[in-house]
Structure formats: structure tokens, C-alpha cells
Length: 408
Image (cartoon, rainbow, N blue to C red; front, side, top):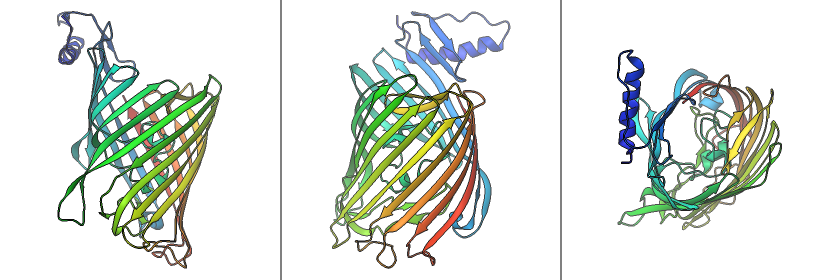
């Protein structure tokens, strides 16, 4: 008789009670023996044959931010807040099925972050259905626990692909040095100018490959595509950026009433790791076509970052993404990000016929005292040029952000 996933959960509770009482009896199981592991700070149970598993995991991220009046939008700000609090369960059933459920704290409410089931019986292909976050580009594919800086490059703010978690279906195949993925996700009712409301679906894909993957050298290339597939959408969403999570939004163009007929995004990825040195960059294009005269708009941008593990070690890599470092405690990095919004459009917010430009410089240090705990300190300098909402040709400001993180 095989042990079911629910039985694993019951066994987890029973194991905890056994450990807390000196006089408790011995926990017994039916079928395969169960292996209990706490090596990563959480709790994982799996049958000896690996057909069933049950894992409890989560993360806590507490941030402190000091923002000047430009970044904060009028007044200097100095505050602390819970950036993320997540608790999830995941596991495997009958060898080919995987499941995941994650709850997240959101402004004192508990919301559903992920809920999905994956079937892997059509090897090497896997089919996933349910709710999860779209992964667009290289840095967006890295867990928020292990991204280089406290926040991802600000150009992601201007991309529709970097939105909230949505429901959908996805087909993917992956191994340690490659990833192929394509899918469709439901992103809500289209805000149409027609009387009939229509459901809106987005299409996305990503391909990544590491042609060189050795102990002392790694080379990564990748490409991502996303299309929101609008139908005369009234508002072009995600038309703004911000230089810090709690900072004010800066609109890149006026998206109201654009009647968008196509909203496509592209990302080109390149990264290299040479022992403790990592180089990474991405180039992005967002191309919006409108039914309104002369209202097409294009946003382009890129970032480049370099990091170094000061006491040895390197970041782990598999299946088209980087993850937590191995073998080092201190990491220093620098990053430059820029965006350009073309001026040849009726929706431009540029002055004197110039493109609207933004740029940010980020310097940071990461400290990993254990594999569960991480400390981070970032300095961010942000700039905006040729924007009609600002008096000066160039306005800029600074932010200092720190984080303490526990992951299990």
C-alpha cells in the first residue's frame, strides 16, 4: 500500500509530537519507509523510493529604507517594513505528479501566491497548470531570495510581463544546462471600447542554454517573449517605473485611452561566471501598437551587473537560472540600468521632442552567515531626463535600502 501525500502530512505532525515528548510512542508507517530531513531549515518527508514527498518551506524579508524626496516623491522618508512573508507546501505524488501551494502576507492580509500541479510523465516535457508568477528574462527567473540586489533592475517595472501571479497552463522541458518553456496565462477581462467584455490571455515563452558549464567557467544565453494579446485595451498597463519599492512612480508615457492592439515584449540574456566573478546583462524591448493615430510607443532598455564573491565560492546554476551562492559568505556587486521611451508618439511625456530617459546605479554587498540567513545593503542613485513632469532637464535622487532575510 503506497503512502499518500496527506499521510505524509499526518506523519510530519506525528513526528513533531514524538520529538516533543520523552514518553511518546514510536511512529510507524504503512508501505515505504519515510525519510525525514531538516537540513535546509524547513521540514521535508519523502518515501525511500522517492515516489512521494512533502515539504514545508517559507521566507521572511524585513526591509529598512531611507529615500530622499526625489525617490519618495516630495518628502524624505525613513521606515522599515515587511517586504515578503511566505509559507508554502510542495511535494511529489506517484513519481510523476508535483504540487505546490504558497500563501503570502500582503498588507496585513494573507493572499494566495501560488497553487499549481505539474505532470512530468511525458519526459522530457512537463505540463503545469494553476497559478504562479511569470518568469520573464534571466533576473526575473531567479527567486526573490537569491536575486543580486534587494530589487530587480527598474526596467522590469515598465514591462507587462513582470506582473502579478496569474492562472494558466505551461509546457516546459529542462535539464541542468537548458530550459525551454511556453505557455498561456489568463490576465483578466479586457477593458474594451466595445460593449462586450472579453477574457484576455497572454502568451509567453523562454529559452535558455549554457553552452559552457564547467566548475570554473559558465556561459549563459537566453531569450524571452511575452504578448499581452490585447483587444482595443483602453489603458496600456505598466507604463511607469520606480527606483525603490516604496518610492513614487514615474510614468514613461501616457497610456490612458491608447486603444492598444498589440503589446509585445522581448528580452535577450547573456551571463558569464568565472570562478567567483559573475557578469550579467539583459536587453529589453516593449513594442506597443495603438489604433489611435500616431500613438505607437516603444520602450527599450538594458542593465549590466558585475559581482564578486570576496572569500571564494560562486552562485549555483541550473535549468537556465542562477540561485544561492555556495562556498562564500561575502558578495559585492555593481549594476547600471537604463530605459529610453521614444519621443515619436502622441503619448510621449518628453520635453522639446526628446526621448524620456531613466537610469539607476546600484552598489551593494550581500552577507550569507548561513545558508538560511542573508543580510543585504544597497545604495541606489536614480535619474530621469527630459520628462515633462520635472522642471529640470535632469532630476536625480538617492536611496539606501537594507534587508534581513530568513529562508527555510
